Amino acid sequence: MILYLTFWFSGKRRAQVMACVLLAGPVSNVIGGPLSTWIMGAFADLHGLAGWQWMFILEGAPCILLGITAFFFLSDSPDQAKWLSGEEKRLLANDLEQVQASKQHTFAAALKDWRIYLMALIYFCLICGLYTVSFWLPSILRDAGVKDIFEIGLYSMIPYSVAILAMLINARSSDRLGERRWHGAVPAFLGR
Image (cartoon, rainbow, N blue to C red; front, side, top):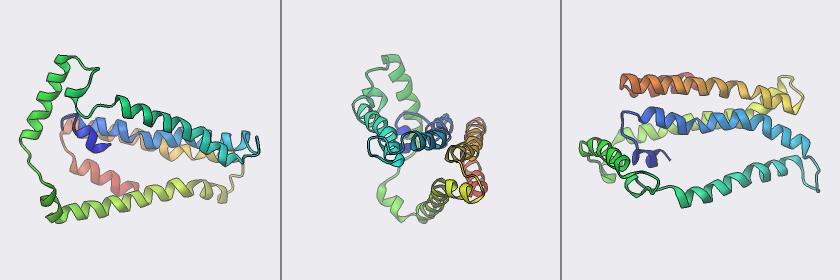
């Protein structure tokens, strides 16, 4: 998804655009925590299926339908988008052309750059931390004394709500100042 957005947005606005896309993670956890726990409780043993099975069906079906829809409606680049006017296509193309003209990268060069491997390792560690919290937060809350499954869903909203606010503020600051490195490094360090 991040690569796809680079085909549409120049560096000037990219942090805010990326933040909006990446907000899907925390937003889904804010909504999904209470929704998932409600589904598991309300639909338990309905038609012979456990609550967790209903959760997979009811939350998975819209994702599948949206994925199929996106396949048919998303364009690879602005010049292929049927829903943009000619003027909008021209403006986007000019904006992207200025950024891409100044940079030439090859896949082979990337494989030889030690910084790519360092960034991959850092990203791996960040994702491990993220998934640890996502998978284990309900168990941690239960072990802390929260027994009601719906309350666990509500309490699990808190860290993700803070993350949403922090991501929006950080992205706006990054685009306003035109600085990327520290706006990425500091939240990564603080968040893990």
